[in-house]
Length: 625
Image 1 (cartoon, rainbow, N blue to C red):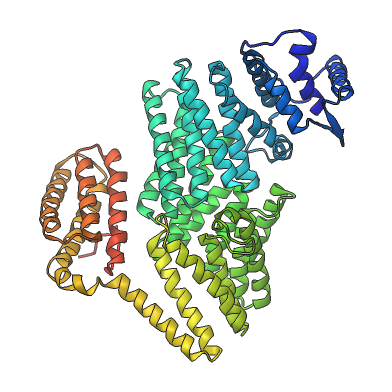
Image 2: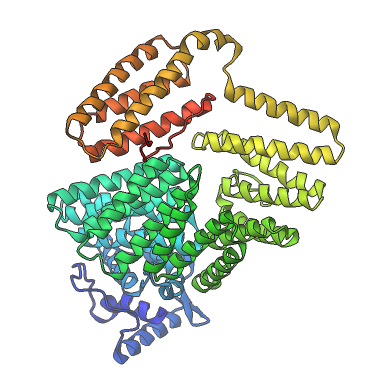
């Protein structure tokens, strides 16, 4: 392969005597499609380079010393440099075989990943490349990012490749040629970037990226009058990803709307019977099932039905493994432990087949976590400890990028997934009466949660509950160890934390009694009206007019309370909620529903943080008279 690449790189210069700056409009050749004559010429180039010590060979691979490479680059004219970059772009495209749905292409792609990233970086230096080659380089960089995230869990590297792709696409679009192709490619890259940012728990940036991708795709779809299947597929994919993001943020109503829209688009596609569409529908059904599991109370039978439907549609190894893992989770909660064990064993086998040598993968860690939970429920403590320990080992590797700058290599990454498994290890250690070891890992969890809560992107409610639970278990360990002073300190810390979340400071107490309490209840009332308005089945008719008037009156009354309330988080949240709902109230039902429900979810989180109980359960059955 290296010899063939050298031939491609040198062919124009050593044999034709000129560089080909014209873009190649033909499809790239497939790997290993060289003739015997081309191989002979490639070997000749190889020998020439070795004879002049321009290349060194080891284990059949040729490399050029860094200083020699720089000297060769500096000796080129700009025209020669551009010609060489275009040759390299074409060479990489001919050798890059990565297909996300085909694991058999992953290993070969990994061997040239760094070359692809290097070619994309060099392409960025030459803004006067033709638009065709800038587009090709941008697409290569995007695919390198997808590969880094999917196969290697290298999220930081994936983000860098995707951001480089966006830079290239913006440069190409500025040239004013093939703008439609650049916009379509940009939407695809923004979609993948949103996914990678979600993996890193950068939820606000992820949403921004995904919404921009959706905006571009919707505009393109309108221009094509909805007749481009690939654009509609892109819209469905991005709606799906927005739904997954909202699940992570625990905005379940908004998530369900995004996912249902995605599923409806996929099922109404002209290619609804294709394997690719079936796989995508299976993925969305899987996520809808996750919502039913996350609800309180959970709808486990409904989740199980959706997962079984998903399993019947998907053939891809990774997707089947993920669905089996989720089925195991449902089975554990239903008490079917033997069935859950079978699901998990099968899921692990599939993941090991998929990832091969890369056993330090986030998905394998997820199976290990579930196996640990299952063993703990069966009171198989040593087995639970081993599973959770393996899960921790993998997550420490995957999330190593989340370590604080300048920290030691043995320090834990500041990531919620790491703190979760540390907590489970602490619980298992306590059950084993290894109180000192249990306290050690629970303290590590405590440190991570404390640092996460300081982060602006953290999920405050979930973290707050995790911290309270952590302090409870630390107190148990201290009590068993006879550390009375530590017990008192932990009790005081937990009490103080609950007071901070439940009540304002003393200086604000009198004001909140007179003003903010009224604002809170008015906000809850207005939020209920907004949810009823958003969840209507029809956006026209008498009922719609009535609900709209109720909501408008409620928003006017809310404004009065906002005006009188003191400057604090409740006032800001209520004002933002009112502004969002007002901006959507006259829009068509499909357009307003997601925005209004998202505003309701955000207000709900603030209300709960102020100690109010907010329930969104809907009883669809009419009471019998």
